Length: 114
Length: 114
Image (cartoon, rainbow over the protein chains, first blue to last red):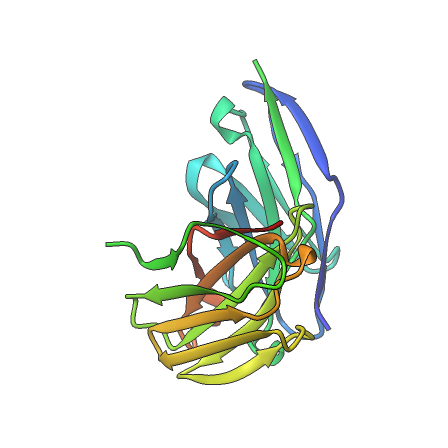
């Protein structure tokens, strides 16, 4: 069975400072991992994905994530936060053996202070 | 040009009513999904269809009945609506065999049961 834990429900950063969103996963097989962002009252947008290629994955808007199998982690980072980064972020795992369904973490709300 | 479109965007209805949410994708994907996002932002899969066949049904009350007339459409019909059905419902699609490429989500339907 697959599962995802996002270690922080809320993260508050100042504009221009680094952002770190932590995610740990559990999977029986080789998973695919994703980060999605949801701005207030909007849909879900894919930030980046890991699909068993390079362990350091670069996404849109300056975000990147590193897959660490030994730690079962897939943390999301950005060197310098922007006001427009304020949103809800979801770490997601998918396994073909699970019928291709996505299992979502509980989400991390990011607040960016000016 | 919208890849995955849902209608309506907002739906307010009384308890006990029957309502439907429609979803269409123009990406040529084989698989479509319904996800439910509750008031705490938690997202969970409800159903998955592949080429009009049901492949995932995640312990959803049988008041919820998905219908897929063709692989580009997946509608969700809900009978005898209850207060607890209030949520945002997201439709999504993906291509069979490339599950690890991520999904495309619709913009969501906010259902409010009063």
